[in-house]
Image (cartoon, rainbow over all chains, first blue to last red):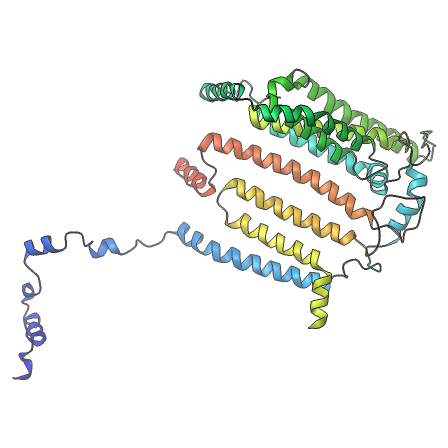
Length: 304
Length: 127
């Protein structure tokens, strides 16, 4: 039996004979040599749970989904009418009517303003209502009232307010004092020129709201509260929305019954022209400005 | 091939809108931070506004504000998508404000804006 003289075969024979202790090293040397080698059960990862399987496949699935969606949409854009083509199906008789009869019927030079505040004024009323509704729901969630107060949070807020009051930025204040009149004036200009130039209630209102936000961030919300409080907010937004609704109700009731509304349209291009569009633009501007500042104020301090 | 390239260059705004939409959607699905999710939602909205505005444009025409009393429909671009984009922007602002308010409430309760951590905490509470 010369061939079984190797170490391997000797070990094999011993293993077959059941002499397993031969393979195990002495107990103390093992402890000294590799005390940090983890056992087999520790190195094996535990089986992934159902949630982990989902999360692992989620990334791949979402990438796959997005790539599929984008390729479908790209294929669709390839088959859509060409960009900027005058013969597109969207350029139809509606636009012709709006452009050719718009000035005569609405009195607004800006066809978009005439469209959204006269032909489609109902849509814009809903839009202003959506904005007011968003403001209301943000207030419901974040306004500090009896149920939504936490003494700890109040302490932190008071501490932050104290630091803020002490560290008012002088540069920001001086720049604000120079810029604010121009911003407010420009906002008013954009609002009341809505029927003559690009702009209108929404963009002008956003500029006015931005001016108020700049003032609040430079001098603190307490300064703004001297002129703009919760009461002002409520009165301005609701009365503007009510004015809008009453004006359009009047026009719809009379116009639907074929009666002349007797609202002078004025000369197109003059500042006091285009009948109700001027009033509606101012209403929308007031709503947007109040809501924009309301968002800022509620998010920073929890009250207006 | 040449035709495809020509179409792609001509429709660049639509393609950019689609790519932006995909970018925003991917981030909306994969980001864990709620604020980043809201930002990616805004990117998706902006891509739709870009698409709508590009649909209203007609080559060589000017913005629909009547100048010099020219009442010809062949001079001005399509005013309807502009109005629709205006509506969309207002709704997008409202929705963003509502999302952010909900995020503030979630942060007040769980002290984190990480969506996975919030779900873990919710599951722990349920058990």
